[in-house]
Length: 283
Image (cartoon, rainbow, N blue to C red; front, side):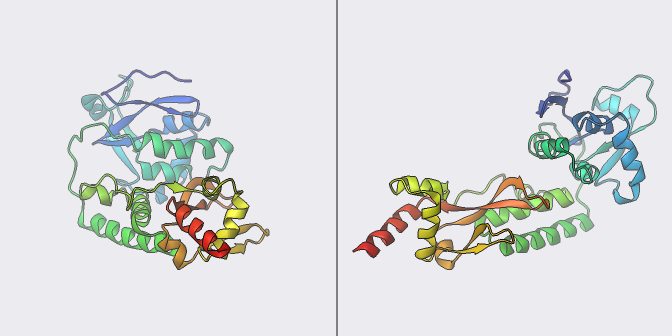
């Protein structure tokens, strides 16, 4: 574990078993090649070498910036040797994701999510001189958001979940926080009902197992069961299920092929609706 002294009032962030002092440029968190090597437990120089070997895949200004040692000292961005005089490459969140994309070891799977959730989302530094977004980047961000919103709806997300997913994808791919541009940091839930899974539905109905609840939801037209290529059951919503407030949610886990694991979650109001269906069927 590496200990860092707080710098510029930015936080020390815990990534797995490693502590890193966050650094920022113009208000945005960035990382050095040395930090990537340390966090991913790679030999010194690995990240820099991988960057140079794939330089044509990285866009300067979006994936990384070059900054002189003098400017680093002047703005106190991070500690740097008094003997350093050349330019230093700082990776943005987008650049970091590109650099570590080929990494498939257990350590990479463990720390990538934490870097996104804990390191790059903590933005406490005051911008030094935030530039106006270029017209080209603005257009790219708008198109990306529109495409991501369409994809979210194809994945059976709607309402707030579709907006949040599209905004996240746009921020990762272009660096632009579309919701942030209009001053929105969060989206209010459409109602005050919490999301629950079939196990919790069963508990509230009197102790049914999740398997039995899923069967009830199918029998009463809220969902349809299918099976994947391994014979495992999965469920898709019907119009009745969507009207009852159910939606697919990202579990933050990944399948073997890297795609996100989604889970069907239900508004807690489904309990009363399903109880009414059960009572009606038994009457």
